Image 1 (cartoon, rainbow, N blue to C red):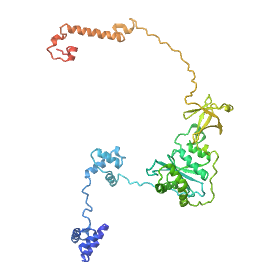
Image 2 (tube, rainbow, N blue to C red):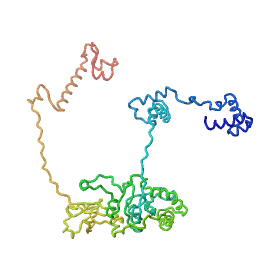
Image 3 (cartoon, rainbow, N blue to C red):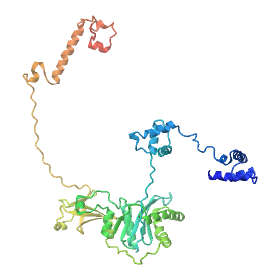
Image 4 (tube, helix red, strand yellow):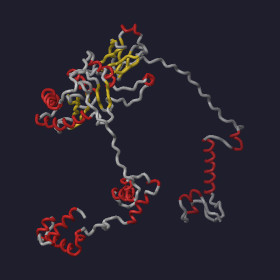
Length: 469
């Protein structure tokens, strides 16, 4: 019996002992007076068994016929349907006018022992202790959210969280790009210094999707993105997380900011990205870190000093080969190296083309800056003379003689010959048709005048008789 049925049995026992009326019993059971009378009648007739639902153990009136169930399960016996899931199989059965819900089909297969119940295996995760010192590890992530609730353009919040102290810094950017990562890292470096390691996700900004070149493979180096190259130059270890849970501190910080910062921007009436960044720097970050930051296990700050050439390191670098005319081509532009670098013998050597975030271009060779000037967009190299090959005169084709094998026995070649043969055939047919004499023994006239009374078709008039007597 169910819990409800056991409760009704207690109430009906009270009615039988005349301790309760049917009106009171109905209130206790949550039914009306008339329904309580029916329950009392079944209890008097069958005792406790009368309180059990009458449809228990009986098949449902809406269940599918046994023939439909057998036909659906028979499909899985076929080899082409052996690996179909319940949802896909239900779609294919519907095309055959056999409508079965995918959940019903799954239960049928489970009951028949054809569908094993497989529980999703949970991966074991090891809890990682916080870093002991401030600056040992910083977690970086971009949070995509409607921060201004439709009042302004969409933007991304680049969040940085120290692993040891939960100290957070953030900045709004238009998109999550390499430039945005450069800007937020520079902001952290100018404020605290360079961290020992940077924990990021496996986005294409931080992880190179390309294949290593032959030189990199021989050197045992993996291909790097521009951000990875910059971190290697700065001595910052770049750690790629294998799951969102691995960098859970910054992920949980994103959730907190998506709840608290959105409401704070709403109360301040901020709807643009510049105003939001000013609000973060002047007011919000200070109070947020005061509330949520914690003391590190070690009081030592392991941040390193920022190098003087930080702006040059946080840039885009490409290697290009110097051409014989001492020019370098990169990104659709060409640069002419100065004559004073003639002692370096740069022809056929690789130089580095560096593009700063400000748009400034620098050319370097082995760490040494080179002087150059930009060539106009239309400037092209002098085309090398192309050697012209002498023209070969085609030999004229001689016409075939009369004694040629193609001319023997009246056989010829060419369009002129066959045109003449066709013309002779047409002339012979016209002469025969206009003679007024039938060419066959059918007795039918062959000329147009003799065939006026007949009902021949147009094709028959042109081709003559096709009857054989």
